[in-house]
Image: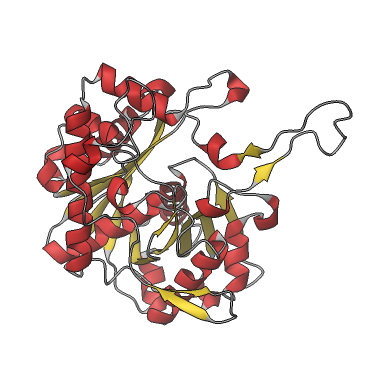
Length: 398
């Protein structure tokens, strides 16, 4: 019989803007502070962790296997296996699904999961430089720019995410004004959550090194804009001439990390912890769809999770859906039959920001906190990713 799986604890850093407060730090450095605080806050010894699974998209060999780096930095024994997943924007949530499967199968009782990204530190590459260019020009390739591809030039699919968003706007008949109106909603909800203290239990202040050798504390999400309005957004230029997508109605480029602790019942007892939420098993999903309409993948994933758990969307008190673009959220809201009153109630990535490897885990952790805060029972979290991938997780408040 499969073991039950629980989210025992979850924390995250504040989300930094591109080139903002977290820019001096690598993704693993931010994640290490969050992970160390999670263990300290819940009196969990590093040797109690049996597996570490990380999610990160913009990896390079100076930060190879980021999960292992974090594990070593916080004192988890060398004998514990640690690995890092890259499922594009689904990466952080894929860590939860992968760890939950291992616990359900009885392989382990305690897992640490990490979603992390420093988009500010995405490297440039110079392909071909190893063997020399002779009479040819050499070009710097921006890995951050390449990250925004909806597929990959390696399989002849050169659409960028903004092209996919414009395609959704046409196919789903979503106009710019509606996108801008939603962008205001998600910023305002994020600001309301910050001011109302609803993130206090999940956000860990980060000590950021300064040039003078000291540190400064970064404690508040940097992205939400108090001055935002439909009028200010309507004045922004579109990315493409004649298009609808702007910097204001799309998720931004960001830095941050989230860390969760998953346990079986035996793991909870061993650690002397209660649970925030049960991860329903079955009740997780990974799916694929047409990369040119990648937004639909989160609807497909959530529906697959609900089917596996023998539930319907009406059973969900709250839904967290990652926002790559306002148009994607609106299209999925319609396709999924999701009521906005229970969708991204404390803001989403258009407002809070989207560190791509972090976001999937962030919304799982926040969903657990939001259910507890509101005295609600059941929620679903889902993420669409470039190239047409989607993941979903169902939680029941413990």
